[in-house]
Length: 174
Image (tube, rainbow, N blue to C red; front, side):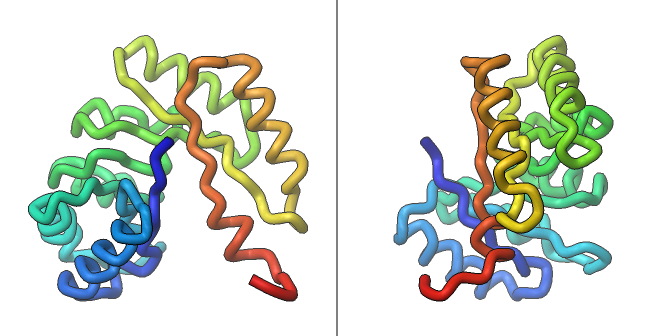
C-alpha cells in the first residue's frame, strides 16, 4: 500500500511552501506527494517543483486534466501521472511515468477496462482508479465499481482517492 497526499493548490504556491508541505506530509506518513494542478490556473514552476521534491528524496505525482501539464510533469521526473484516460495514455508512454487511469466519461467502467487493456498491450504498468464519489453524488454506486473492477482484474493495482469523499461531504465531527 502506498499513501498519496495531495497539495491541491500547488500551482498557486511558491516552491518553498510546496517543499515544506511535502515534508510535513511525508513525516505524517505519505509515500508520494501529488502536485494538484488547478483548472485554468497556470503552473509555470511545475518542473521546478517536481525536481525540487525529487532532489529532497520525495516521490512525486502530478494530477491534472491538462495534457500539457501532464507531459511537463512527466518529463520533469514525476513518478506517477493522474488522471489519464484511454485517450491520454500516450502521455505515460512518452514520459515513462506510471499512469493512474480513470474512466471517461465519469463512472464508465468499460472505458477504464479498455484503458487498462491498452496499457497492458503497450507494456505500461498502470494503476486504476474507478473514482470514489461523495456520499450524496453516487458513493454506493462508485463502491460497486471498485468491487467490479477487483472482480474483473484481481491482480490490478488500484488507487482509491478519498479526497472526493472527505472534501465534499459535510459531517458533524472530524
